[in-house]
Image 1: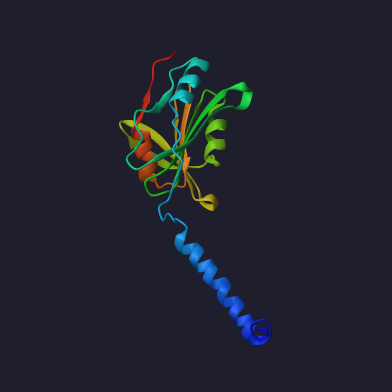
Image 2: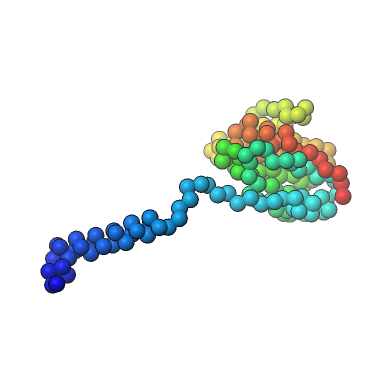
Length: 176
């Protein structure tokens, strides 16, 4: 028995036993090859935001096909303004976020959300004009719409078409 505990053969046997145990462990451990993105319902957050602001809140009427809502929150912006954030994983598994606030000045809020103040054009979505902004170093695209009482921003790594897809399902809900 001594020859299996010393020298090269002992090392080889110990290595084989360890590899066999690791292989057996991998064989019997369930493995999922599917991506799992947690889905978070934002309806309560949107309702709470609607009760805390003096204007009708914009929110998606439905999620775009294949999109997963994965974050939502209400935060304080500049000058005490409320900000609603809704985050998504898009159908192409890019990131998109919708933010809205009545923060003043509106240009400051839009520039902070888009990480740039440079417009690169406009895009029509459902009859509304959105300003396009792009920050090259972050590969961040943004659609900005400044309304009389609030500013809407859709931003992220998603392409322009995906951002427009989110803009197309936004609807203003009655105040209250």
